[in-house]
Image (cartoon, rainbow, N blue to C red; front, side, top):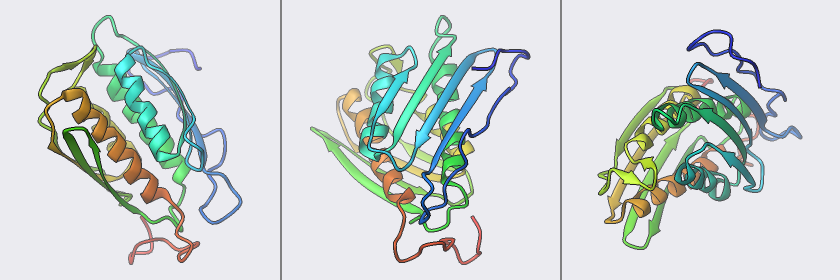
Length: 221
């Protein structure tokens, strides 16, 4: 990972492998590094993976949620973050969202041939969440999750919003997240991340009826 040279500056954000266009032999992968005075992060994604994950953020429950994205999204995901956890988890969670968004944007490439839209409902015992995503090229987040607890282990439940806000701002997607039912905050959060993973998986999937076509009447996204 690059060495920090300037506070609050992104020193590196580059894919080490060119993203493959859907419908070609290219595998859609990207790696991004983001170093600031608050966090040092390296993220690698393979959108055409099998759900493998190698995660280290220093926040156990957050790692558990990121694993849901990999497993249920069938995305190979590696994330290493060294953050200022002596303050709290805010910078770590938000900056991982930012860097993951950057990596997904690079891996998805020009968006030719993808389904673009995805949605999922996921239950976990008494909890039920719905997530809808659009690779619109326009960042937007609408989230309604009335967490029943402020903390889930050492994870501040409010940071769920910060993670997804960072992601949408840099993946350039529109994202709607609703927790429809839930009493246990762990269950609420887990259904959100699992539904996000399933919606993401559907949206980035290659549509065999639309190979090489931008899924928009505008001709670009």
